[in-house]
Image (cartoon, rainbow, N blue to C red; front, side, top):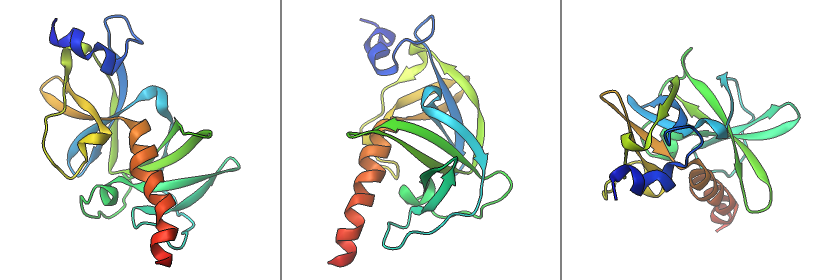
Length: 175
């Protein structure tokens, strides 16, 4: 079995040739990707309403067409340090399935790059190592030309890496 066949299940097959489209973005000078089908939009940075007793990476919430959307700073979530928000700072709005209902979350990133199709042959399994970005939230690595793109499993990141900690925060604050 080839490497591409082994990882076909990891990437899915929405396009001919076994490729998946990813919105790529920059975070702390590294390139990351999120499946384009999970992205609802990209918008410039705007002021948020802060919510007390939340983890530092949850910057607050915004009202987006009547929905309250939590805004997560991925740099802070993965201990990559803070950055000045500037004209390149954007919020990637994603929608994921949660246990009880679909959830919309905004992810603050340094800049958006572009949409790339990553084919199975260009997919690499995430190496076993500890890093700032927990490997449990990664699908793997995608090669785009000679650049490596770190591919998030956005469902796992939002459900386990963000919402689980947010739900724990009020209990931690009360302790």
